[in-house]
Amino acid sequence: MRRITLLFVLLLAIPTSAWAGKAFDTDATSGNELLGYLDHGSWDFRYDAAREIKRRCIMEANDALAALAENDPNAKVRSAAITALDHCGMDATIVTAEAMSLVDSEPSHRRKAIAIIEKKGTARSAPVLSQVLKGDPDVETQRKAAVVLRHKAWTGAEPVQEEAAFASQDRDIRLNAIWALLRIDRARYTALFHERMRTESDDKARLDLVKVLEKEPTAADRDALVQMLDDGYAHVARHAARALVKLGDRSVAEVLRSKSMDVKDRKVAEEFAEAASLLGG
Image: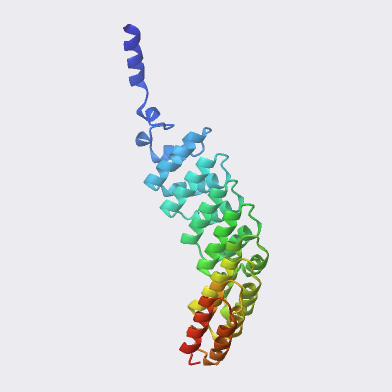
């Protein structure tokens, strides 16, 4: 009985933070102590300090958190540090995210950094994302960079995007790269876009590219769309016809009518005939 009582007393003496799995009691720690713990020899102290600093938004931790995010040997600490920087909007957030997107050993951390760049970055980050697009060993991370560059239409990564549009083994990267270029400068990259569309081997990728033109076709897209009427993938041919209708070039009506008589796929033939009628042919 005395042993049980002694054990109970010892258990009561254990700090509450230990029950919670924390390295120290964050609720009873000053801001200066938290800053000191960022340099602690045990990773769990650095981790808990970074998380508590995020909760309190202690802006004086800016430099220390940036150093941890870039250099700490523990992945959880690096993640907690960049999260704190981002959450509190500290000055080093973007520069640190750029560095992390290039050098962190964890692909998920690099993608997390890219997400921060997407949310808070500017066109100055484009060259960094171009490095990710060109050289990251993880395809999903490359894809994330390509998507952000497409969404933002930032200049500064065009040479890498041109290469990726044709050389990448990943269809999503190819699509996002060429789509981004079209958004950056439609007049400059229209011909390249058409070439990518014609030479793309993936049926669904060609369909996606035709749909890009279908949203807002221009006169410069006319001949390329007419060529796509002969595409072996029925959906591509049908959407090319719809894009031509949206373009409103009545001179295409005769071509559509003629092709509606030659094509063997009934749905494609009907689509072509309907498009010809809508254009007055």
